[in-house]
Every structure is written in structure tokens, then in C-alpha cells.
Image 1: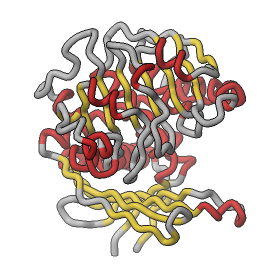
Image 2: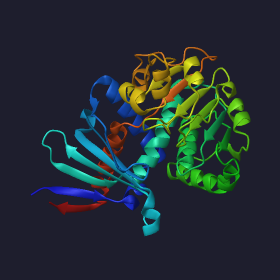
Image 3: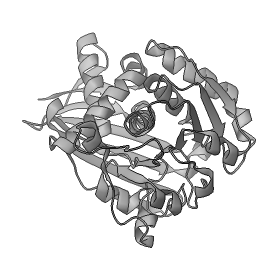
Length: 338
């Protein structure tokens, strides 16, 4: 017999905060580049192309003593059944014995670790005096991106929200995003010190910004090269499947581009199409190499930097391991014999 701890949303929210996610994600990137964490091949399957699919990301992390996987399924017809379109489930196993350790709701983990990924990219690649952030895309991830950035980069004093396909959505979402951002920051002992504003004109907001986060499902660029001034950092998190692109290829051609996993960035990330077009023959490196001091990262205040965050299994595994450890100590979750 073996015991597995089942950990649901409520218990995850008790122990996993923005700052915990930031630490977990940074350690995951460092572990990958140090060779103590490995990303295994991604599985993607379409049940009904354009309407129902799943992806499986997996790997192992020596520092946490675990391997694991996350399965995310998407069914666009679930609203008709009063169900969420997305379901995410994570599994952790002991790296030495293979014993199942935990089954977790991956939804709240994914939101926090995705926001953290964009912010860790900015921490290591943006200018140290960055004051203005624009978030392109006003979906559910927006407050997680804002909170992670504000918890990481104390110099920020202004956050703009923009929505490329329906500009008025930024104003419609402003109050909810601000409240959710404040709640996330409060949960980890931070208070918001930056103003959050809706921007109807994405071009002006991006042009004023020192940091840009893109979080859309775009398959054609929504950020133009002409908008991006010298010295800007861009964290791209929306491109995670073939054919997606949020930023014009010319931006990446002008920039020092870093990724979370080189092969995955060229296969399904923001780098995919610029690479195929020949304007981005290679990355400057992976973010983990910058964290470890093996790559320089930003080399001047005028340099444009880009972080292509496709989302790697080690982010989820490191986060799940932190949650499991905290839940074991606090007696949270439900232990089941299997």
C-alpha cells in the first residue's frame, strides 16, 4: 500500500503565495540550467481540433527529490455543461522510489507560476530603474502578472492594462484586476505602491513602458516593433502552441532574446515564427543561465530584451513540491491509501 496526498484549491491558496511562486520558479530555471532539473518531451493531443485538446508537461527536479507531470485539458463546449473550459491536474512522485506523493489541482498553481515567470524574466533582464509596466491582455492572468511584477520590482510606479482586440475591456476589467492584485499582494505581506490604470491606446502604453508583459492567445502580432523603445524588456507568455505570436518578429530581431527552454521556444513559443523566418537564428541563452551568472543578460540600458516563457514542467514541479511540503507540515490535504 502507498499513500498519496490530494491537495485542492482551498489548501493550495493557504500555503502558496506570489512570493512562494517567485522563489519556486526562479529555482526551477536555475535547476534546469545547472543540470539538476530535466524537462521531458511535451505531449499535445487534439480531440477535436480548435475545440478540445490536452497537453502534458513533465520532468524531474533533483533538488526537490521528485519527478512529476501536469495534464491540462481544454474543452470549449464545457460552458454548455456548466463546467470550466480548462482543467489542470498535477502529480508528484518520489524521484528515488517512484512512489506517488501528491495529486494537486493545477489551476491555482499555474496562474501563480505563470505570473511569476514573467516577473522573474523582468527581474533579470529589465533595467534596474524600470518604472512603468504595460500588461497586454486583460484575461484571468492579469492580476497574477501585476502582483508578481510589483512584488519583484520595487521601482515600478505605474501599471497599464491594455486589451488588443477589444480596447474597452481594459476599463471594464480595471476594478476587478486592481482588487485581485491587492489581495494577492496582501496574502504575501506586500502592499501595492503603483497606480494601475486602463489604457485604451496600446501603442501609447507600450511606448511609455520600460517593461511589457504579453498575455494573449494571439496568432498574429498585437505588439508592433515601432511601439517598443530602446531599453524595453518584454516578457511573452501567451505563445505556447505552434502558430501563436504576440510580438512582431522585428522586435525579436532587435533584441537579446532569452527563453525558458530553447527547443520548446523554437517549437511552440514566441520564437517559433521569427526563427522560421530567419530573423532569429539563435537565442542569447536561457534565463536559468542568467540567474546562475553564466550569461550576461542585459548588457546596456539601451538594449531591448525579450523573455520567451513557454511554460516548462519544472515550474509546476517546483511549485507543487513547495505546496506538498507545506501541506505535510500543516496537516492539509487529504491522505488516501492507494
